[in-house]
Image (cartoon, rainbow, N blue to C red; front, side, top):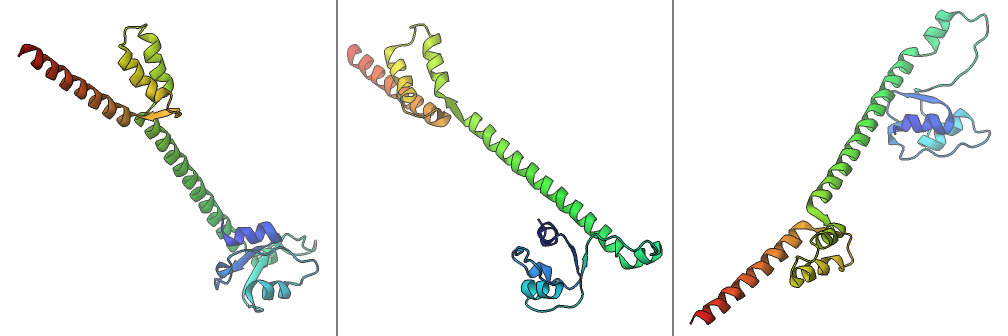
Length: 179
């Protein structure tokens, strides 16, 4: 949020600062009762700076000409400020969209790289006893591991290594029986 918008929210005035004094503010202090405009400038900026204009809602005298109001009210600045605020709002919306997209991407990545332990239990349940006890034990290790989601690569790596070990033992036994 821009510093000018924070000043507007906190103090109720829109500031025109052509010299960039407001940009030096890190934060906007709270209002003080009965503080004058001069005291406010000194408190915020350290000195009674010149060239700082404010726009505040007021009711002009009924006989004031509209051309006078046009010249004195600084409508060009107000229009510029509103356009800048609109760009700021669009930027914030874009930032929020990017954050949501990033969160969605992280969630999608998580879904694509993990398997819920419920799925492992479903594999056991749906096999209706056709799985070997070693396969059931293999899946139960992950189910009982205390995690809701298991890294897919971890499961597949462990499965391939276990399969490789079993095949190696089988071939070794087969070779011993044929001798």
